Image (tube, rainbow, N blue to C red; front, side, top):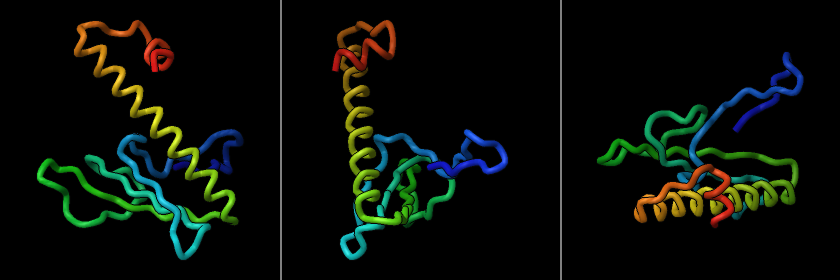
Length: 115
């Protein structure tokens, strides 16, 4: 999650960061302009609210509420997050497959094209 850097046009300030495969987005039923995002990470991801205590491995759950001007924008953000999450998970599975076979793709692009 980033916001525009008003003092440096074309740049952004990162507010919250977490690997895509560890987030769960969902649109709030009562308000279709609110996208709820849950993160489960080690350490603080930035400007997110902790939810409960860390698990036995030290992973902490966090939540964010992203408010949009309209339901269409909120839905587009949800679809983009879901698409990118799926891509990240497929890439990780392909890397695991290569690892278990004893072969390593020569580049990240090989991993993506193999999916």
